[in-house]
Length: 487
RNA sequence: UGUCCUGUGGCCGAGUGGCUAGGCUCAGCUCUGCAAAAGCUGCUACAGCGGUUCGAAUCCGCUCGGGACCUCCA
Image (cartoon, rainbow, N blue to C red; front, side):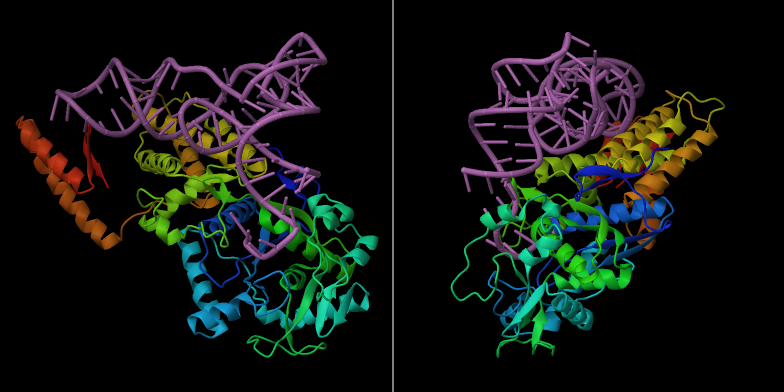
């Protein structure tokens, strides 16, 4: 089997994955800023990294998956002044900032559960790691790569760039970056245009603030990830992930801080997921074009024709490779929903498939194809194509058009288990068991009656039963072995 | 303006210098009392113009279109 290869933003190449200390793998992903509901674009990123986490686990790695929750220090504007997003929202909703944090953290977790993602190993918060951040800032000041002015601490990008390569993650030179930056306003106290805040002084109206060597204040946005990744994964760890939009600013600054602090390259592989777009434009909070997952499930959004189940939405996302942009549309969603249901139906078919003594399918090769797809930078599009190959074989066998041995059937079951359920993290959505058991008995009865009616050639009545059931969302299928039903 | 990414059949989406995924839709066929489901068949694409090559959707250049970054955003 070919090795796992992943696309590293740092080198702009696909590279073989070699953990620092196999079988242990350190994975850090930038989590949400919990001052508002997560939108679907946010979800795409976390679903992508859930897939990556799941596949690494499937390969047998012992993964420590750290995904932070940003609950402080995220400023509203670009001037490094004023209150942060939580305090602002708190004032708006007349709540404590920590109530805001709690509300949206819970909402985030609920959505992630609906999407059937695994919880990370550690989910640290910025407010829980103020000391670690202060310690890191102190050390960066000691190294002369940050400076304090009036209770604010800034990172000195130009000085840092003399020692390291500041623009390495985006493959850009400092001069280019400087050219692209807005001119400083007169009252700005930063020395360089690209300098960014590590610590921000509290104003009298600031609600969330902590004591520090530079007075009362709160940490800048980027320092939390440097501090927490170092604490839980070490000075250099394997994989750091996040959305592409974080690459230029947040991750670039994160590398700078970490490298300034410990003189080491903090991360071996940087993975970035592409954006979810609506009508070609990035879904973002500031544009106000964000879909909330709840709206999508319920179908109560102006752009939606109907609601879609979480698993159908997830399948829609997984049909596109994580590094490609994904545009949201009703047609695409409907196509995915249909395909997903067929794939799931295939698993049911598989479970009552009868084995033959000979086989004319190569299931082992199919399984290898699945691994090959995933090992090529987690190519879920290709993986899903192979799963549909499996589906075709299953249905053909069910129609007696091809033959499978018991070994083949068992291997197909294991492919479903490993790839559909464990790696892609999809599940068959079913109604609760009590109702389901009762319904099952009722349906057995109805089918029994209808079969009698059919043998009496009373097709008018049998069709009526079928149509009425169909109206109720239950579909009857007449097969040679008798009728079956599904919701 | 600059830098980077991108443009695939009705829709969505992989992809390698030659053997041309997959899903959905549509049409026909098989099966069926009729449906549904499933299977089979068909629709065969790579923005445009040049160039490199025996051969390019895949490499290079230009043009046109879309997007990202330089403000906050997964």
